[in-house]
Image (cartoon, rainbow, N blue to C red; front, top):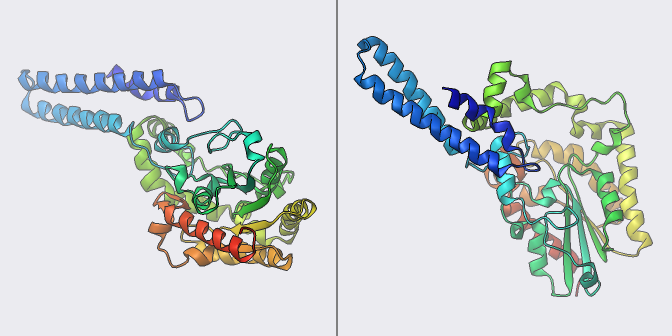
Length: 365
């Protein structure tokens, strides 16, 4: 089954969201179809061959399994599901299908004309993938876009969410953005502290590419078969990821909040947002996201509580997302069972709370 080998071999040529090759994608479909036809043809030939019944039985079973495998693999080439990480092939499909539009500044947002924005009251929303809307299929369902719908026409909300962003990265992007804010919203997550250890030689990066831990043959099959890749990341990977997190807890960003040196450095970074808004005499609102998974209460205590204490002490309006979503089951507050990013219902609740906070603080008329 040379075509079957070529089917799996060609997966790497398809590429990910950044270097996707449509030609390679169609070539892979062709190899899959050829493999299906050959397996079916061999089954028909075997049925009329003089091969002993016992041998014929086992060969038929083998060919039937190959037929099912290549059929399933072909079908899963079109499955798009968010996993909260770009390693699964289904997540790459999801990104290609839904991660749009991308404006000229690299953000998942509609095009912005700087000149036109001068006629508006500009609200900049800084954050990571929670703000960019990882797992949310349409940008209209994100909290920034929902907030835009609630505000008067003269207000313009800019979504500056960037996957993987931590606090200092967000601050640097604020400095580089061509539109200066009239209001600023900063969305803090459990990973916002990560940047404090960039220059710490003792800090190790946890490799969550757990499919690399497989033996060579299993790794090749999992990384190149859309069917096996989906099964691996949906059913096998979650428990292994949890194990790796626990085994490497000292390098898990959430535990940085328990280390006095790192939390002090992080709060110093957060002070930069306060200084910026004070100097420019503009309002600042802080959102604090807990983890959306089963560790929501733990992350609220470890992460959100000290962040809330810091900003409340500085008289900065603070919204704890935990209070908005604590009674919503995980299956409803998260995007799906394999992606713990906030779901649509969470985005809607945040938008409503933001609008309420704007009114309470007289930031809008």
